[in-house]
Amino acid sequence: MGDSEQKNLSLSKIKNECKTKFVKVHCNKCKNEQNIFSCVSSKVECLVCGELLAEPCGGRSKIKGKILEILN
Ligand SMILES: [Zn+2]
Image 1 (cartoon, rainbow, N blue to C red):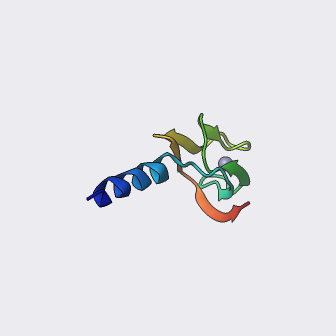
Image 2 (cartoon, helix red, strand yellow):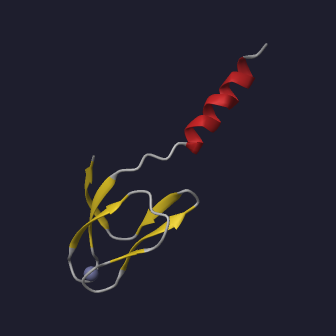
């Protein structure tokens, strides 16, 4: 019975995968549109007003602004 072992392996593989894409976000403060990585390793601030747009969060990132579009 190796079924459960196989399931665990594939789950951990998905968890470690971090797809890096560009996303277009809308700054909540000044309405500036900015393209940022969906997977940031450091804080990203709005180039116009300095509002925090994204911050790293356990291998993924937390997008603070409104996501308008996901770019490839
Ligand atoms: Zn801004």
